[in-house]
Length: 472
Ligand code: NBP
Image 1 (cartoon, protein in one colour):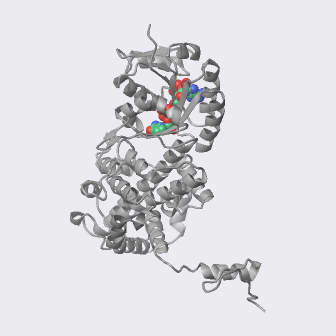
Image 2: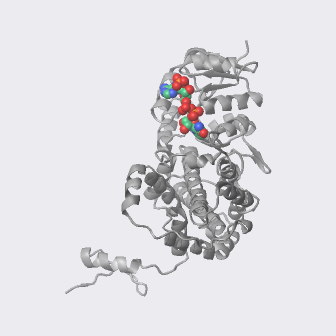
Image 3: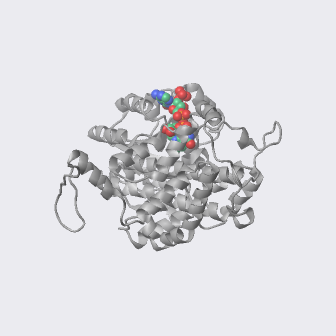
């Protein structure tokens, strides 16, 4: 019997769909799962009549694969990934390649690449985005590791990936854990945009008094514009229309308002803090999830802490796309991308990843959760100027800021007067206002620090380090 081209470990929703994707693209496959009954179920169900066979144990699994073996692991990040590596390593031979497609912490991937390459195996840490549908139809993939290992799976990945006008949504990201680092930042941007869209929904509902189906129509309109056309706007529009079969009312209104934040979003913010990258919009989205988890406290606080009386403000109307709210969504989405790029640029220097922003924007244009038409503009911006310091300085994006900053300011002011939290909108406004201010008040911070701690300060008009006795 001829050996299979490709092996998959872990038949969760992502693994199942990725192996069906590989098989559809001409790669015969063998699958292994810890619980064998799941493998049997898959082979009798979605895997039936396909060039996919199963293995009961890892010895049988590796024996069924052609050499050098190409094995994709789709298991939970952390201990499960280490467990699979430890269990399978004794059966691998020189040149075999393990690919971790889970959401691993990039520092874990750094360690695994070093350990596995030392044993003459290849190891790729690969971010995969697109959810279960993307995994089946074509995800965006962010592989990192040695160039040699990437070359060994390039033909497989380029066929499996989503395809856009200028090529497949996969590229060699860089060495070590760079693929998982970029996927982490992708998810941080995703956190930001999800919160931004949720803030716009909250304002339309509580300040503008629109019903879910009317808000859905606004999202539908936004999705026709160049600035907001995106997968997340498209699915938000659809979610807001779904009715609860129990009573025919909007289903989203029945969902508990709590969201988790333990994985990649948290890692993005930790990395940003460690690297000294300014990411207030992304951080605000993470903090919004933390606050959301305090449901019972919020219920008590609502009875104790007075809010301003909610009034109706002019935030546009549904026929003009809710002008100021749209301005806020556009600028906050741009800020999320700009801040994500900022983290990647600093990490690229700090960890010698040599990341290429143009290629990253290109592979995010299709398949992934944050795909949007803005990514074409981002790609153009870094094509035109690879040394661009901040996305906001590109002419197209700076023009967006000029056109929309008044709308964002109006939205944030109205939200404040109405007592409605808009953490991403307000953080974005402060981010842009800080970034465009050449003289910030940190001169006074420096004076205080020198006053109480003799930390010294620099002057604008003279070179050197100065200390003053501020208080006699
Ligand atoms: P799950 O994480 O839900 O399932 C993992 C599978 O791994 C199970 O079938 C499990 O087998 C198997 N497994 C094996 Br083999 N060895 C294991 C071990 N030692 N410990 C635990 N499980 C083991 O799958 P998923 O949702 O497809 O996610 C897979 C990875 O992809 C995760 O890292 C996830 O973060 C990432 N990811 C998910 C998405 C998404 O949209 N869901 C998107 C992008 C990336 P069992 O049957 O015995 O439990």
